[in-house]
Structure formats: structure tokens, C-alpha cells
Length: 86
Image (cartoon, rainbow, N blue to C red; front, side, top):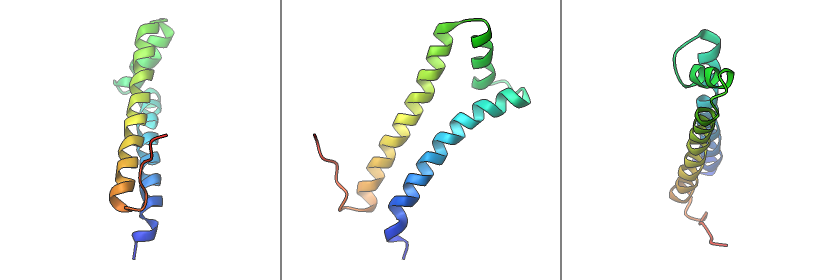
């Protein structure tokens, strides 16, 4: 019953995971929790560019890995979808 909509569902779930990671940074800053978000803001204020680059790269890596996992799930859920090398 849900087979036709699973690809769309996987896409939405993947985007939500990426938004959760980015939203956690904002929530940490607003509610003054100790974590990556507060560390990122402090690093920006102190002009610690290496720390800022590292945290931005970490968030980007999480986003890319999440999208790669989603692409693998596409082929598991729907065998008609196959990765093609270009």
C-alpha cells in the first residue's frame, strides 16, 4: 500500500534529519546550552576561523552523508531506481 510513496517519504525524512542538525545549532544558541552551536557562535565572536571552518565542514559532511544514505535506500526500496555512473 505504501510502496509508491516510500521514495518520497525517504526524501522528506532525509531533509528533516539535515534540518534537525542545523536547528540544534540555533536552539543551543537561543537557550544557552553548551554544544556545537554555542561553540560556533563563540568562535565567530573570537574570530577563530579554524574552529568555524571545522564546524561548518562537519555540518556539511553530515548533510552529504545523510544524502548518500538516502540514495542507497532508494535502490533498496525501489529496485527500478539505480545509480548510473556519468
